[in-house]
Image 1 (cartoon, rainbow, N blue to C red):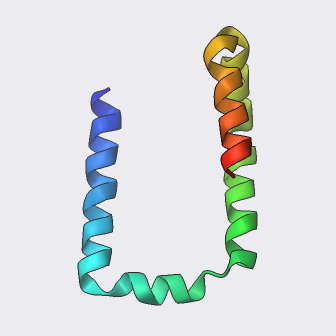
Image 2 (cartoon, helix red, strand yellow):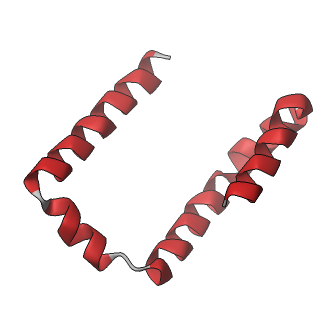
Length: 73
């Protein structure tokens, strides 16, 4: 839990710095939907073997989560 909290703190601090410095506008211009879609897919495929085995352990939570993720994406 501490590791997750630390990661969230660092990630949000980086987001704040990017937002206030104006670098976010430059980065967003470089990212088109054609470049973001494969990036998201590759990250998802990389995490597939870690997460999908956990779904089999607790189907009551995992199945609705997968359905929500597919519906919202």
